[in-house]
Image 1 (cartoon, rainbow, N blue to C red):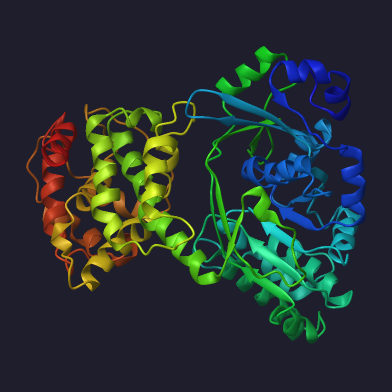
Image 2 (image 1 turned 90 degrees about the horizontal axis):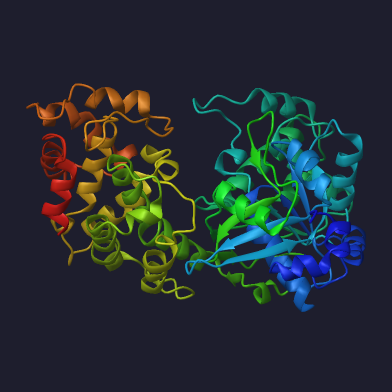
Length: 537
């Protein structure tokens, strides 16, 4: 069983016998129609796109509610196109890992064209410009991670490629956002044609980040005489929208256990490829079943009825409420609780933590009791039902190969949003009292204990990547398990840091509680478990 167009047509019965859902449409016909009149181009050819966006289009093609597929452009790692898309005729297998243990296997064929976003590749870049001048193009979507929109490095310094592109103009840019802006400039020059620019990256107000980058390029090019003056007006007119969205679907790195299932079925050539940029890609992606994509409904050139594929369209205010509901209460904070204490207690799978009495109770209290009272119900999704799905279906799914170590990445950047917003809401509400928050400070204390890089048994472990490790770890470096220490003096600079926690913990009266918990957590080996039992039980 070879994953190619010939492979699935020549051995159709064998694929179906093994339980694979194959395309129900004429793939060649779909590809031809898409190339002639593309309506959707996506930037970022990684796992989330393959498991979500491409799969939504596949389902709609199967049902006959779409007659065209997608074009995908990869701007970070061109080898993904050369080594994964091209050898498999743009096909991919999506393995949906269900909580009941079943694996739904789908051969997704909705990608009509895969191109590198490479201005040095004249054929590919010329084709992308051609796509951007088509009347039929309605939307450009993105999954390029939050840093993909940034024009500066971590120190706030302008990236060299960006600076060079500002000066050189739109002909042959080197930076990601420079290339995207140059494609939009081609659309402007072709008659100021309308288009929706839709970030579907998992970050707050994502459309604003995309707009800020593109508008900056437009301003620089116009000022430098590299673009027509009307280009800036076009970017800021109602012909181009930069919509907000909230996306939620867990797609961990392709897992060896899933690869083994597919190999046993007889699928060949499944070996993952690690590119020269260290991107880990395989002919398959594994993902959870639950998915949400809520998009601000602002499409200047119209759009298909993507509601039929499960996407939700609403106004900007509602998208904002949904995003805050997820990030500040109903999912991300619970993940962070499990990440911190999972690392400290030696867990290697998030799902296993939900079998732990104390950890299960911890996230239930943080979610339902402490977080839910300050959530604004967005209407389009019910917050309690969302948490119910997270805690009863998504996180306990034993077939999802997600780890606390992965989720613990960049925790210093997450605490302010994931917990600080709840603290602020309590402080601002006359009927609520910050002192009633008992377990959020236990999570903060747990993070400080985690920074010691010693587990509950006293064994050293490796901290997950985080840009502030060099800044914050020295504050806990002097602590030893079982030894008395002046906790308050050592931790004060961190606890009053609003950038980390979203609030000054002294000003809201939480610092003393965090210090008290921390003392208990460093009392000796086994103290973490004992502290959890004491306060969560």
